[in-house]
Amino acid sequence: MKSLAVQSWQWLGRELDRWKDSGQTVNFWWRDDDATDAGIALDRLVGLSHKRRVPLALAVIPTGLKPGLVDLLHDDSLTCVFQHGYKHENH
Image (cartoon, rainbow, N blue to C red; front, top):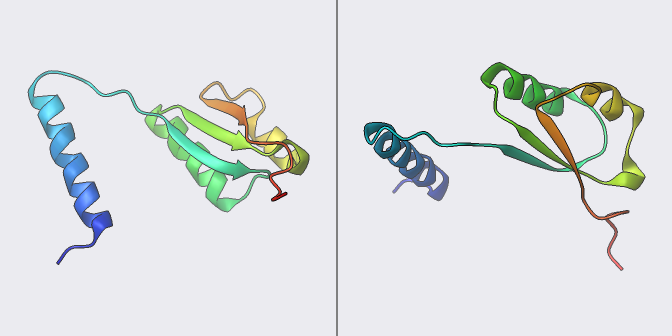
């Protein structure tokens, strides 16, 4: 039996094929939650966003924001920053 993740990717592939076969296009954007700083994974995601020209939404926690993230996103026209809570703490 295939995992749910594998089944989901296969379903998405079939759905995208149906869109393509009907001459339609799909608009995508990615979202990354809990961003506070630049790092290997986020650098890779931003790079992939630019390579494929797919917009990226970053849900940033304001009180955890580090200068590295500000530097990474400076003048980045494909990445939108969304406030994700304030401190992201349980109360």
